[in-house]
Image (cartoon, rainbow, N blue to C red; front, side):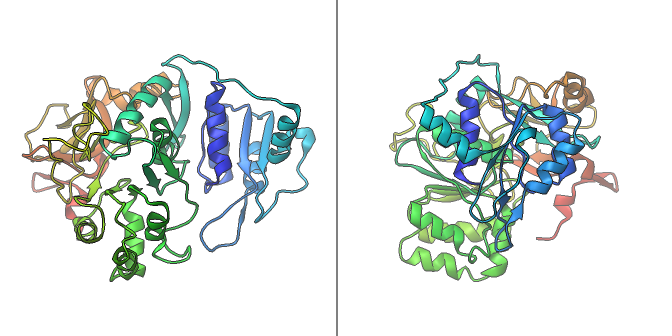
Length: 428
């Protein structure tokens, strides 16, 4: 999570090529799987990773072992040398190169790559998700829909419109959240993006997020409930939040967005009260639900529901929807969310079932897996005979149209002829 990672990613897009970013914490075997699946011509890597207060983690053993294990051999491995731990003594004959030296050499020689136009249906990147067979699934994101969908969602849902706005997505670019809302969406609309390497606690304390909001005048924070649980554990009375808030450091924040797992109502309620006291007027905690396959939120509560008319207009006669703790909001534009039984028949509002999507999907949604159409059909369409896309999640839509994502479909259990999810049974 360093600037070079974003620069390298955008440089690949500039020349019209496809990239696949892999989370830095993956073991060599997992990396080898992705090398064989995508068959890259080059690997871009740092010499090490930083994980909180732990010593720097060398990437050399992961990369060299993964390349040795994989049947496909990339022609080049380009290494960004970090000051914390260098990767010395690499094998140049095998294609290993120093990233900084390559850049200096290109600058000295006046080399510059022109932008390469691509078709709207061409792939931008592959994002790998875990697969039930043990091999990762390569979700393909397409250029046109990716740009159009993210440009809409960053304004409509997140309230980030352009220069002067600041987005802080506390994720990793190895995950779809980081791809969408650290790299592409803020930059597509001309806003600033905050790149953060660290943890919400221990770097140096549980007030890290609030310090960043104050320092960079962040307008929207996007994180996972797990991060907030860790902060609550270390700062149960929210003293660090209140300390920054009392000096006006949270006033720029319009919303706190949560995704990645189900948000328990207690977390939502607690932070909602803090935002009402210290953040911008009308600030909310907004849970949203999506996946690698969707590319942008399937559901949420839009900060700017009049965005289709004028995204920068602050005067509107349309009020944002209310937030309902425990739900992931309502369907976002382009996503047709339904609840069905195991036969694919829709069930009444308020009843548990399988969450599926009608087709076509919103622009950011995937249309295939990388070089594996058969697996795409078997994994997402076969279960309901091509009528719906199976999300693999279970939940319900209540009487007001709010979506409640309770668990994975295979976590549903039957008790006395009633269907329950593990999310419904969990104590909060």
